[in-house]
Image 1 (spheres, one colour):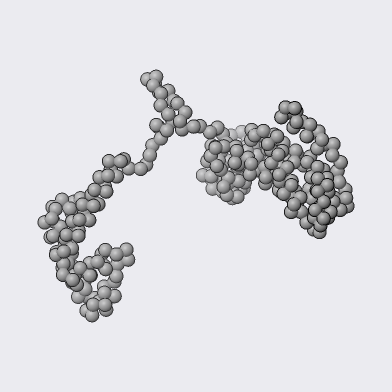
Image 2 (cartoon, one colour):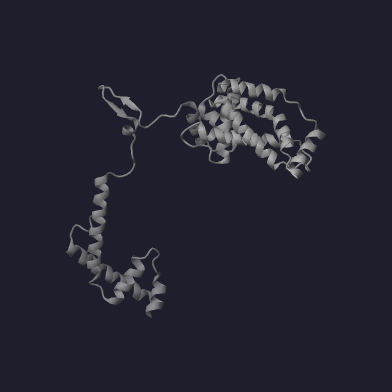
Length: 286
């Protein structure tokens, strides 16, 4: 039996399954929950397979196999049966609908594209509602700009206009491999990746910057050698720390006024400048 024939057979069997009255459904749920009656659970799920099929037809426009959608919905149905509490005054179909829909949506998000999307609840709502909202908002309007539609959709779903525009672009075109060959005007070929522009610095720039940083660090270490102990401490704590100490704090530590600290610091900076220029005249302009 082919897969398509097996799916049709399953759908026909589901549609022929008898509906359960509220009392019968409650009794079967109690038997399953309290006595782990597998036959009772089977009757409940079989009677609600038409709900799975109905839900699967609503997601058929995402281009995934109907059989796979039904299978994922059946997983959600079994999860609902395992979690259903018959003591609550709610029909099983109402409870199971959420689990069936969630199971199908997770499957679609994982398999619709090789690029994962819908990672947040807002993006998930946008993914599954964008087409419907766009069609509804555009209906009856002769000319509607994309920006106006994006604004209305973003307000309706509580997401940014940028997210709406990005999702619309994703839904409007298929995935494209970066290794797909392209033919240029001269007849040559190249991959899409060859046309991507990187914002990272070039390798020679990275190496040059690393060499410059190392060279300046060496110059600074040598220049610091001209300072006496107190000058070096003030420069280190005032200039070479992420959060430099205040003049007042250093004055209290050293037992001098903050004005005296400022004077020592100023003198130390002049000594450093002279030493650095002597070591390498190009340092200050580098």
